Length: 123
Image 1: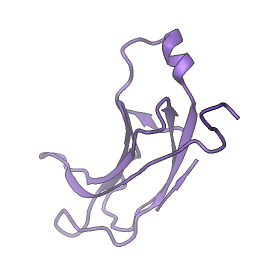
Image 2: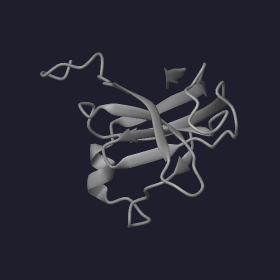
Image 3: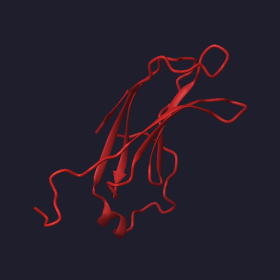
Image 4: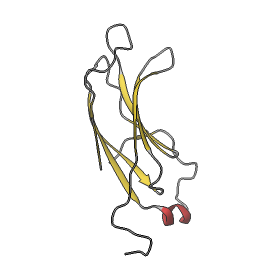
Protein backbone atom coordinates (compact mmCIF):
# COMPACT_ATOMS: atom_id res chain seq x y z
CA UNK A 1 0.00 0.00 0.00
CA UNK A 2 1.32 3.44 -0.82
CA UNK A 3 0.07 6.85 0.18
CA UNK A 4 1.44 10.15 -1.08
CA UNK A 5 2.98 13.05 0.81
CA UNK A 6 9.98 11.94 3.91
CA UNK A 7 13.34 10.25 3.64
CA UNK A 8 14.71 7.00 2.39
CA UNK A 9 17.93 5.54 1.20
CA UNK A 10 19.18 7.51 -1.76
CA UNK A 11 20.46 5.13 -4.40
CA UNK A 12 21.42 7.56 -7.16
CA UNK A 13 22.84 10.81 -5.84
CA UNK A 14 23.89 13.76 -7.96
CA UNK A 15 27.59 14.03 -8.68
CA UNK A 16 27.79 17.53 -7.19
CA UNK A 17 27.22 17.79 -3.46
CA UNK A 18 25.74 21.30 -3.61
CA UNK A 19 22.72 22.13 -5.77
CA UNK A 20 23.15 24.60 -8.58
CA UNK A 21 21.07 27.76 -8.74
CA UNK A 22 19.25 26.25 -11.74
CA UNK A 23 18.08 23.23 -9.73
CA UNK A 24 16.92 25.47 -6.86
CA UNK A 25 15.08 27.74 -9.29
CA UNK A 26 13.24 24.79 -10.87
CA UNK A 27 12.35 23.00 -7.61
CA UNK A 28 8.58 23.10 -7.21
CA UNK A 29 8.39 21.18 -3.96
CA UNK A 30 8.83 17.84 -2.26
CA UNK A 31 6.70 14.73 -2.62
CA UNK A 32 6.64 12.37 0.34
CA UNK A 33 5.53 8.84 -0.42
CA UNK A 34 4.67 6.56 2.47
CA UNK A 35 5.30 2.91 1.61
CA UNK A 36 3.15 1.05 4.09
CA UNK A 37 2.92 -2.67 3.35
CA UNK A 38 2.51 -5.46 0.84
CA UNK A 39 -0.26 -8.03 1.03
CA UNK A 40 0.07 -11.61 -0.30
CA UNK A 41 3.09 -10.87 -2.48
CA UNK A 42 4.36 -13.49 -4.89
CA UNK A 43 6.73 -16.19 -3.65
CA UNK A 44 9.98 -15.76 -5.60
CA UNK A 45 12.33 -17.87 -3.48
CA UNK A 46 11.81 -21.43 -2.23
CA UNK A 47 9.07 -20.67 0.32
CA UNK A 48 8.92 -16.90 0.61
CA UNK A 49 10.34 -13.64 -0.73
CA UNK A 50 12.66 -10.88 0.48
CA UNK A 51 10.78 -7.82 -0.83
CA UNK A 52 11.74 -4.17 -1.11
CA UNK A 53 10.27 -1.23 -3.05
CA UNK A 54 12.05 1.09 -5.49
CA UNK A 55 10.50 4.51 -6.18
CA UNK A 56 11.66 6.45 -9.26
CA UNK A 57 10.92 9.88 -10.62
CA UNK A 58 13.14 11.15 -13.44
CA UNK A 59 16.75 10.54 -12.40
CA UNK A 60 15.85 10.08 -8.72
CA UNK A 61 15.75 6.59 -7.27
CA UNK A 62 14.94 5.69 -3.66
CA UNK A 63 14.33 2.35 -2.03
CA UNK A 64 12.98 0.82 1.15
CA UNK A 65 14.82 -1.67 3.29
CA UNK A 66 14.63 -5.37 2.43
CA UNK A 67 12.29 -7.40 4.64
CA UNK A 68 13.52 -10.98 4.72
CA UNK A 69 11.27 -14.01 4.22
CA UNK A 70 7.92 -12.20 4.28
CA UNK A 71 5.14 -12.10 1.66
CA UNK A 72 3.17 -9.66 3.85
CA UNK A 73 5.87 -7.07 4.60
CA UNK A 74 5.27 -3.87 6.56
CA UNK A 75 7.78 -1.15 5.68
CA UNK A 76 6.07 1.96 7.07
CA UNK A 77 8.76 4.09 5.45
CA UNK A 78 8.58 7.62 4.06
CA UNK A 79 10.54 8.38 0.87
CA UNK A 80 10.89 11.98 -0.32
CA UNK A 81 11.36 13.06 -3.93
CA UNK A 82 12.21 16.55 -5.20
CA UNK A 83 9.68 17.71 -7.76
CA UNK A 84 10.97 19.94 -10.54
CA UNK A 85 8.72 18.66 -13.34
CA UNK A 86 5.19 17.67 -12.27
CA UNK A 87 4.68 15.95 -15.63
CA UNK A 88 7.20 13.21 -14.81
CA UNK A 89 5.50 10.02 -13.63
CA UNK A 90 6.36 8.36 -10.33
CA UNK A 91 6.99 4.63 -10.64
CA UNK A 92 7.00 2.02 -7.89
CA UNK A 93 8.50 -1.43 -8.37
CA UNK A 94 8.56 -4.26 -5.83
CA UNK A 95 11.59 -6.56 -6.05
CA UNK A 96 12.63 -9.79 -4.37
CA UNK A 97 16.21 -9.45 -3.10
CA UNK A 98 18.51 -12.28 -4.20
CA UNK A 99 22.07 -12.75 -2.99
CA UNK A 100 23.64 -14.67 -5.88
CA UNK A 101 21.49 -13.60 -8.83
CA UNK A 102 19.77 -10.42 -10.07
CA UNK A 103 16.80 -9.31 -7.98
CA UNK A 104 13.43 -10.51 -9.28
CA UNK A 105 10.72 -7.94 -10.12
CA UNK A 106 7.45 -8.78 -8.35
CA UNK A 107 5.14 -6.01 -9.54
CA UNK A 108 4.95 -2.34 -10.39
CA UNK A 109 2.72 0.71 -10.55
CA UNK A 110 2.95 4.22 -11.94
CA UNK A 111 1.12 7.42 -11.10
CA UNK A 112 1.20 11.05 -12.15
CA UNK A 113 1.16 14.11 -9.93
CA UNK A 114 -0.21 17.52 -10.77
CA UNK A 115 0.02 20.98 -9.29
CA UNK A 116 -3.40 22.24 -8.20
CA UNK A 117 -4.45 25.88 -7.88
CA UNK A 118 -2.28 27.36 -10.60
CA UNK A 119 -3.21 28.58 -14.04
CA UNK A 120 -1.41 30.03 -17.06
CA UNK A 121 -2.04 33.63 -15.95
CA UNK A 122 -0.57 32.96 -12.48
CA UNK A 123 -3.82 33.20 -10.50
